[in-house]
Image 1 (cartoon, rainbow, N blue to C red):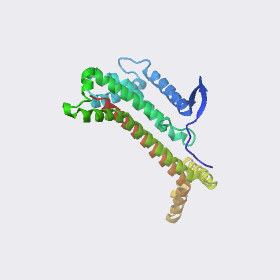
Image 2: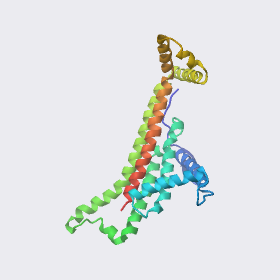
Image 3: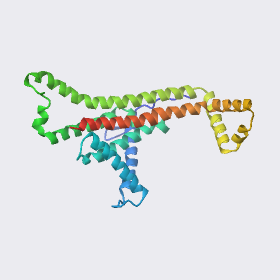
Length: 272
């Protein structure tokens, strides 16, 4: 039994345009998030009267505080964008928790983080032009003194281009790296005919101990037998513990961290 990284493939075409598995999975995530936010935003009242509105207001407040502290005051217009951005990236990153070896997370396809970074870049340039005017915006590329224009102009242009590129490569590299490491560990664990049996037996033993009163009998054993029982339990459950660590670190922890970093850097790039 082999585990491999799912490839980016074209499932079908529409009017000659190729539809990849990344695009299909992206649409599914967007549909689920849209339904969730429509549900959270329905029936809102001036005074909260339920957990649903409290959750919606908490999300709005957290994102709003983050936007205001990084972009500046009077920037509430960015809250919907960053709420949607944060939710989509987080859902995409966490999709690897249960889809390893089956579905490639959209953010592990370089096209997805590049599209998100490009949107941030366009919004950033538009906001800077709106705040400073087109004349002052263009003057910012020239530098403070005229004789530095030949040096500062290309450097500033490269700097603006580097922002979306760095956002793209940072998230794509971390997600793909975690996917590769997770796949290698999975291949090591279940790459033989013995390991799946080991995992299955470990799962059965663990469930049997937790769901019955067997753990009380283990407590009453003498010291030597108790250590032996614990050791056998750890050996049986070792693959499960390794898998839990892989998903906990590379999917959940790293996915949440990369989501926060991407959104935070996007805010910094947009800030005046």
